Amino acid sequence: MLTMRPATPEDRGALAAMIQARADWMKARKLPNWRCWGEHVHELAATCSGRYGDMWVLTENNDRILGCTTILTVGAPWGWTGSEAEDPAYYLTATVTDPAERHRKLGALISDWAVDHAAHQNIAYVRQDCTSPALAAYYQTQQFTLIRRIDSPGISTMYAMERKSQKIPGLAERLRGEESGEVIARKVPTHPKTQNTAMECARS
Image (cartoon, helix red, strand yellow):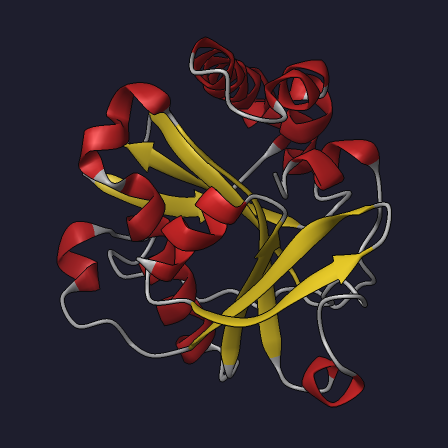
């Protein structure tokens, strides 16, 4: 059974192993920014402490960690207008899945969970941004709409995307919460986005 639950500091070792596997997978395929991911494995795994956002982990049988994502309540200022920033929205970052499980489309499952989770919390949108055109195209297969492409001299092109929140029919049959048997709805604490190199790598 797959479960989405809040990360804890005890998850750090398993998260580091999964993120390292992802970095190795990227390196083997000569994907951009694999080195950045590899150099910041432990910083990304440390997000389970809640320092840089509200991390959630996808587990199987409440044991093995198959994926993770971090929810922020404030988006990157260069990606969203002032009026958009006023919208109630969750911003996903550092979403990682075990590359050995790619055939299970766990990234799409995490996106569906986030959209459903936001709907249960009366949050209007789930948003993401990235610097990779291939990743932007992938997110669009998950029903995210490209809102804008930001081109700035000397800075990587950014892609800002969003998806309206909604309750996903049948999601509870694919993914259950750890306590109630339903998808968990937990309030995300409001905090400003903390910038660090590891979290910037997570956009690539």
